[in-house]
Image (tube, rainbow over all chains, first blue to last red; front, side, top):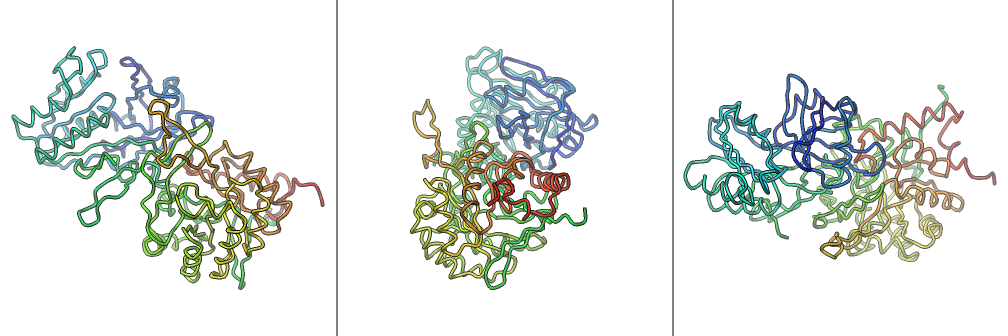
Length: 265
Length: 312
């Protein structure tokens, strides 16, 4: 973990409506990043917005010292990000968070992501492929025009599936339904997921029903991003005798085993 | 150059004093127990560390969301999540003891007896250099803030805590009062050795689509650059009437903010919210103050403190 106040923007392009891909030159971040980790970005040079924005690492190129992020414009911070141009310096902190646990067994894993939530899963899929794992990657999107290009995954040998809410491309329905179909017909050792909360709730249910090891990436409004301010709490089961407690999404997570996450308080 | 000293001394009772190598400390609740920030720099460089607020029993804190960003500020509703005094002494203090930086323990209670008991328990704990009474946390249902907004209860809680500790005793006041000077005078009369000014301002925010407050607790505490001018004004006013040292805080983001607080009357200052955005802020402020002193011909912090006030 470190601050890189002189990271450099390599490219920053709109790839589909409201979604951008930014490549950032930051060798130290690139060399130590693990799938599931995030960087905390200072989007403004002024005090508004004040806080940094946590954004998952989407891809990295160790050799060239580059990490990339995939972000959706949802508010002031992410809108400011769209204004960065190649060669601009950008103040980032990271890599932060725990990352997805990824054993080195040559097993089969399924990744299910919704919307911009596919970002950390793309990084995971690429790393897992290098470890000779069989990766089934399910991308969920609202419709054909909001699907994100995943050529890199196909090139890496992943099985790529898509699901759209309106059926305009791939499977008609949620990525979770497609995941269920996979689990019915073949052996999957571990499931990984990131996306909107309703989707993660369904993932947890599927995980419990199928008794399959599952890791999900949580989101919460963050302050410091390093575990000091206790701002990004999420409720997590400790064990039966101790019940549940609050954990920090930024430092204890953002990745948690699905079965321990308590969604509805 | 050699004559320039940044040391700050807050005298307690029984010849116990809080001696800081420079006037910059970290504000309680923004720095955990130091571990996270130790990854960024050597904590020995800080003037002091005020740890996350401690209560007798562990507290799990408030349900999320706990943070709302506002223009140049944040509202927080953490709810004093902490491991309790035993957990703190057993699991957090040993790490802090490895540094040559004084540790200020911020304490909160539901009752006056709880403050007194916390003070008594911490009085002779190795590695604790001072106590900071928190009578200003807006995020818990009972106690705390209630003691900070009423003169009589403030007097009682400070006096009882004073009777149970020989450590330098700091009182962190709430700005959510009509007359901050009156509260500061009360703390002084009750035996405080220093005053921290200020804790967060009460605020709220509403989700316009759910049509209800965003925080489960409705209100939260506002911090960050947005509150700096008000905090600074309060330091100014209190300095005119109170003789014990003031630790200034409230939106300090760079060395210029820090110098303003010192010139307004602060003997030391705490960096809070700014730690979240740039963990190196306290060190940058220490360097900035030192350069300012050299350039402006100040030889020590005492000479600078309150310098902006007209001569008596």
